[in-house]
Image (cartoon, rainbow, N blue to C red):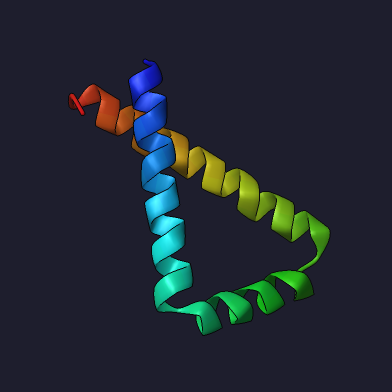
Length: 65
């Protein structure tokens, strides 16, 4: 189980690092857009991301990854 957590953290860091390395301007624009959203909309976006991530991890676990 702890290996699965390390795998997930590693994949998150790879994805985050790739975005910052390949498209730093896009990250800045995304942050500006997020700043302009109301707090409730940012919270909903975060919760939706968490649920989607949970579904993806659960699905990967179910198929044997």
